[in-house]
Structure formats: structure tokens, C-alpha cells
Length: 103
Image 1 (tube, rainbow, N blue to C red):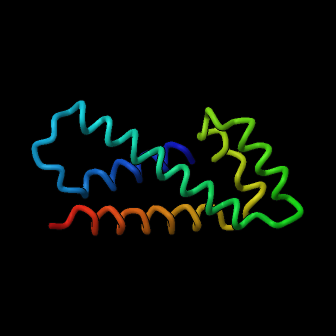
Image 2: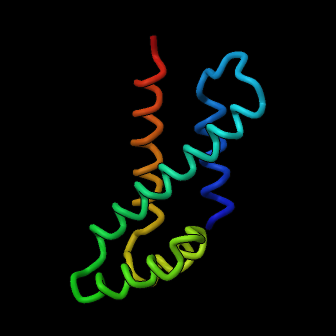
């Protein structure tokens, strides 16, 4: 799932009109967007986890906080429709970016 998420993030960035921003700045922007998206997705998923599993889910997130890709690997166990939630969050972020970058 992580590679699919990476592809979706790349598509979001490609859809932004970044003009003549140099490659180093584009890579920095990609890292920043990836971080923000991962945080947004994880927060949204925490909201969706059932109360009885929430503590365990948060514990797993904290165990792997340095490796968010690992967190994304076990979310299906904790969250029903995780892929749909992730897609919704990606779409919402894309819209937020488009609003922020429009003149």
C-alpha cells in the first residue's frame, strides 16, 4: 500500500503548478507534503478505530513513529475501509493545496 500512497502523493505534486522551482526545492516540497499527508491520514485513522482497539493502535503508531510506512501496513487490521479513508484524505489535501496555490 505504501507504494500506492507514494504514487498518489507524486500525482498530487505533479498536478500542482510549481513553475520553475529547482529540483532540490521540489524534493523538499515532496518530503514535506508526504509528512503532512501521513500525519493527516494517521490522525483520521485514529478517529476511525473502535474504542476497544484505539489504545493498541496508538501504541503501535508510537512504536513505529519513525517509520510511518510500517504504520500504514497494519492499519487494515484496525480500521475498516482504511483505503477509502486514505483516498478521502488525499483528495481533501489535494483540494486544500489547490486552494492555497491559486492566485
